[in-house]
Image (cartoon, rainbow, N blue to C red):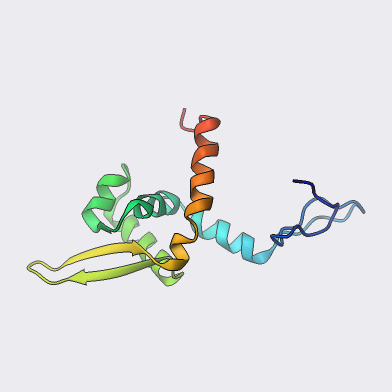
Length: 124
């Protein structure tokens, strides 16, 4: 992948400037990184990429994630259109979460990031 100095690539992201001016990052790219880069958001999306989960299953899938923060992240991801919430009848009612079409479109990028993280051993 080659970058043209100060020119946007096909993905709209600006890279280093040949004329000495600062490069600019595409606002859409920045917003996406800010959303999925929030603490636990990426891990929640990865868990949901495997299948829909009930709230308790998500808590178990992502060790260290509190119920309060999981609720907050799920609301943010739902507001962004990446996750859909479904309420299932019963006593008590159960709530499950699944990726929307927009959320599933992130799966290739998340998979690439996972491969990169494993190759560079970021968990150690």
